[in-house]
Image 1 (spheres, rainbow over the protein chains, first blue to last red):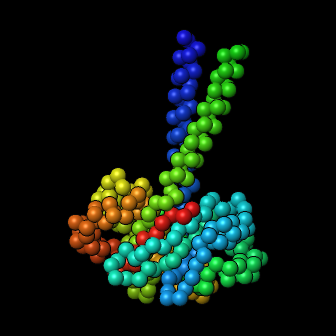
Image 2: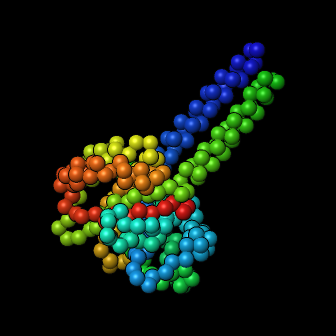
Image 3: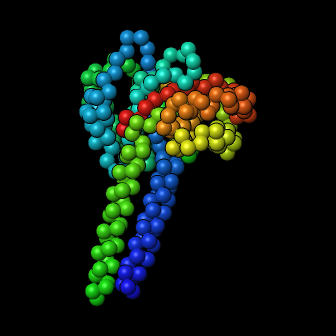
Length: 135
Length: 135
């Protein structure tokens, strides 16, 4: 019974410790990170192949970024949130990185390969926003 | 010694189980979520008070959303990622929700209060993007 009690207590303690550390790490990791968002504006006649973007293009670019990349996300535009306004963006891909200069240094030598791949999934010229995670 | 071994093994097992579950939960929660992004375009003469936005406006709106709100984020625009292009957005606030119709139902009766608060932090008319988390 004593062993069982010790073990149960340990499970409880390590469980909460792991949970609490995970929460702290997550908050600490996100705030202050740099986001590089590649935003594809919607317009009549514009096309975007989400499957290619998700399975080929984004993994390729992510592969150039190494340990500087914390995570990347992809979202698909559905509608404007304002009635009777056109969809602002068809898609947005976002890289969360620790350092903007490291991002630029990693992308620089691969810019031609990245641009050459655009034609495989879209005819849109993207807008690129560099921002900082506040919360 | 035997107790020590049992305890060490348990620590190892529960540690990995907690980590793996956390990863699974996170991925499952994010994919398919709806993002409502309120994007504040930059232009000459436009102003944005980030402190008010972070401490007053966003918490107020988040408070209207109840259990439908999974999380919300705030980012501050720094630059365009394309040389010699103007900053696309000064700030973006994003609500991650489970249901768009529940979001609209919660915002509807509070729209006037939300709009009235705009003047307290900005003179920008936002663009609103409704999108779906693909990855």
